[in-house]
Image (tube, rainbow, N blue to C red):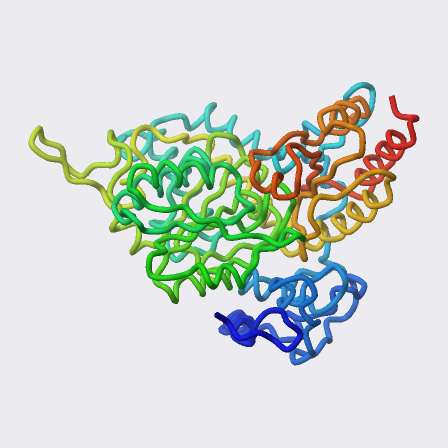
Length: 500
């Protein structure tokens, strides 16, 4: 067990882990500690002048608070600890995407039931900027060909575009090489690939796989299937009543039987930001690998897979303003090299005879058949779009919106937020006394406001808080304060009985 602090929370060992993460974040960077540490409670355009050695707030709700990132104030170590190497997530001149950015998204230029569309269903899927739509159309109009083996001009252009998209993903994630980037259909397929390829080769009877209580079903069911096949055991890392991962329980669960820790960087249901870098360090000390589900983080916070310590990182293109049908599996090169193929067919082979087949090196080994070429190109354009907007600026913008959203929802009579995590990213869930979530969603739809109502493919965590369904508004790059105001106004009308 970890030694307890005098105040009863956390541990001195975890304090050292946090300090080490900050040192690692500064290594090789021009940033000073003052650019990475700032009072969260200060105005977003306040000077970044907080000292590095300022005391952290006492642990009040759980081990997550030792990061010093709370809605009550304290020291914002978020950029350094969660996204090592990233720029400071702050406001000021570069603290928001450019004005009028929503005009880049054609789908937002419409009315629903006679009202301006307010898209607050971004955790389900994001809208696409015009340049992504145009890039996909151009591919089919001008460059459409299969890739890699053609001897003609269109094959060369299609190959360049497809592999160029891979290089864009590699830079975006901070991977060491393009060979660590595998194109798949989405997050779900990426997790299944790891479970069926790496898992079948490395997980055996009585081995353990750890997941958190926060998981989307796609980071539960593939591991259940693997455990049923191999005799391994799936264990659940608990969360506290706020919705934060209990690092003390997690530390106690780690041991020689644990082969993999699979966890989200951000909860799709309640928005919890998980301390992935710290948890990865703890897992690696015990010899376990770490898979990070980045579906709900990649559009909202800077991601550096090397800094996070991820052995695998997965995400879907449609969650980050790209097309559906395309996603990414990042895997450390040395891990991918040892993994057998999952699917067989064209493109993933070196040589085939009727007696035996030899397989291509990654990533081709895991890309059997004709890939989703145009969608990969669209994903590359979407990531370039996000880079130009500025990931630190996006994070700061959405941090402000989240503060407004939580405050506004909290002001609605009869409305209860689900969970109170130390750091919320992207999404928040709520219920209203006497009203079914689906009915609330339908009412908001009549106001032109799109939210998600249901279990969000995350039934275990909703049941942890006593619910079968919630209403979930979620944020994107194009949302602004007027969207939050319209949502809160509509909910106040509904709560007062004036809403129809």
